[in-house]
Length: 328
Image 1: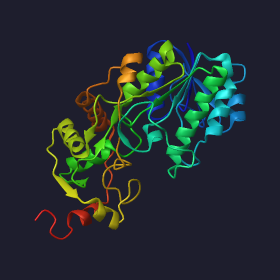
Image 2: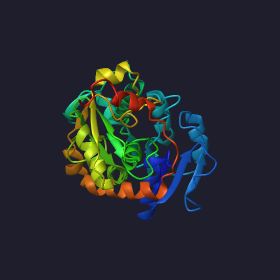
Image 3: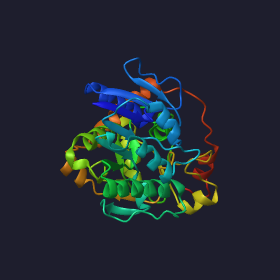
Image 4: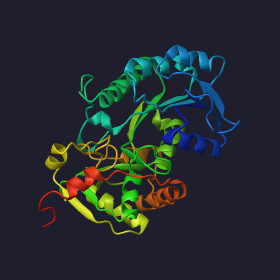
């Protein structure tokens, strides 16, 4: 197949490109940089995914069977109008358009299936609203015009080369013998997916006829509590973590941030709980999630190979841990 990956140079896209190459596909990457780092076997198309004219110019004269729309502009946002305009560049000339959405389209909830309602266009969290409205636009194209779209709704993605300070956050601290703060009593549920499984789900959604016109939750077979997550990170590293529960009210009052200088539990890892029922992807696509322990073991091995020692300011965490009577 001739394949285009929109946003193929970072975490998810990079793994997808490599997986496609392993399968013998002819791959091109569309991104904003002059070089993609894959070598001459991968086509290099340069432009702005938020500008349909830029996309049209870059792909002019080329034909693709599958298009994977993986990128979201975290600085400017990516609207439904921009997603639809990009999709229309390819129109009916493609066999499948796989859009990387997110479990954030649900807003919040437990054991959600794909028919659960999505957040409205005016939802206060812009990322959630734009992903949900983008899905609505693409599925409207499918209903009215037969556009061959499939969407994927992953939760937190983990794995080697994660650009978000998540797995590394915990292993940096454990290796220095530092305690790990757990918000509240650590019982909040999270759902994760291994980056290799997400890349595989992209290919399955493109190649299986059952994927057309469908949304798929993708993720590990079961959610995990925040406390159990920390323990799993420790097991992967062969380190028993020292866990310090801190009430969320205290974290918030002290200025804790889910992304920023006052980080306390990995980037965006302490969010309202969203867990998903992933049986549809297993049933229709044949996706078999990697065991969490196995995925973490591979991720930790990569972390050890690539980590760069740099000073970390623990002042905010120390202040929370040292609060009066903590642990007494």
